Image (cartoon, rainbow, N blue to C red; front, side, top):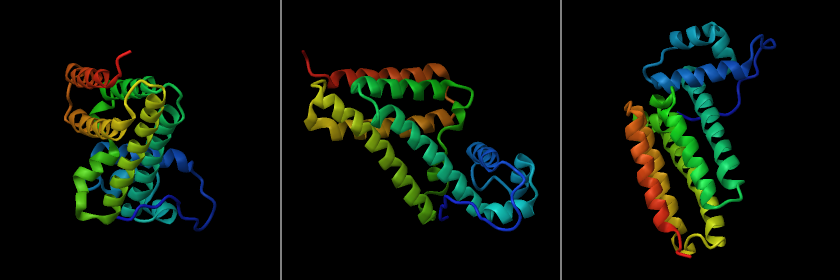
Length: 207
């Protein structure tokens, strides 16, 4: 399933808001997954007929690729805002984790993560998904390393262990989305975050 980031430019000017339509499609695939979502479902969710969808976005597979790209870009923007572009080291990591915790405990927490959901649903059956999954992990890893590198430069943690710490956090965040997708309650999710917070505290260099 090759992903794509641009919609088709066929025919007459569109008479709908492309961003709004794609947001609805993202939500639909996020809740139902790829294989359980039919074109009829997409028609109902977007209010567009099949002809308009095909002329603008292509097949269901192509539309899913566009939606997935949109989701990954959105999550990447969040990583940039909090982790890569921050200036507070470990506090940036804590701010990011708190955002994720609130999201996981919120009304949409049981959706998990569309990128991770797609990886577990389609896995290595699709080269496009394999590429997407690796890129998604790399975005997360790079963002976390940026914050951890700032922390090491500030003397909060050891620079020698930044790579290991980043991998621990990537593994935690990916596993959390699976737990949330399994409809874990707030108490279980909070316990997960309490555990990772305790681990992060052990990384600090004693004053």
